Amino acid sequence: MPNVLPKLIAILGAESTGKTTLAQALAAHFNSPWVAEYLRDFCDEKKRTPRIGEQRHIMEVQIAREQRVLTLATANHAPFVFCDTAPLLTAIYSEYVFADTSLYIEAKALHARYAITIVLTPDIAWVEDGLQRAGEHVRDDIHRLIKHALGEINVTTVEVSGQGGLRTKNAIDGLQNLTMPNR
Image (cartoon, rainbow, N blue to C red; front, side, top):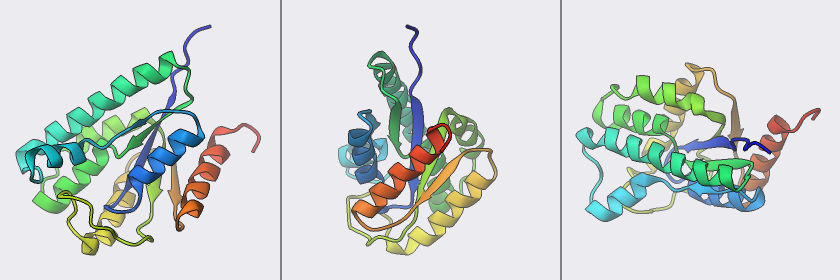
């Protein structure tokens, strides 16, 4: 039997919208792997946020991580790979923090790899979580930039809101509605 590639699922949202929690919950529910956000590891290792010249590196490492997990998921016949963020979010934060739009062309092209993009709304409480957090005040702006960037490219999106377990249920329902035939 030939290997069928798992569907890459991007999970995008402003900071503290539950991307990691949702990626882990979806991975467990669908018996599929997830790809951790490299930015978190970068900030933990360097004890600082990235500089403008390091944004491309953040993006490239994230894609390399996705490719490694996709290879493993293919060998294990997993249906999905859940990606805790995507290069497009790196490009969005580069624009927001540094007024640098140079990553958009590549990030938008790379976004075609994802079968579905889950967009998390900033409707849950903001939680302090490490160096990469700019603050609650940026969430609405980032959410608008995400929606704008996704509107410029032809991708399938599912917007997910809700508190706690409802947020996970809404994401599962959205995925099932998009991936199941005759639903």
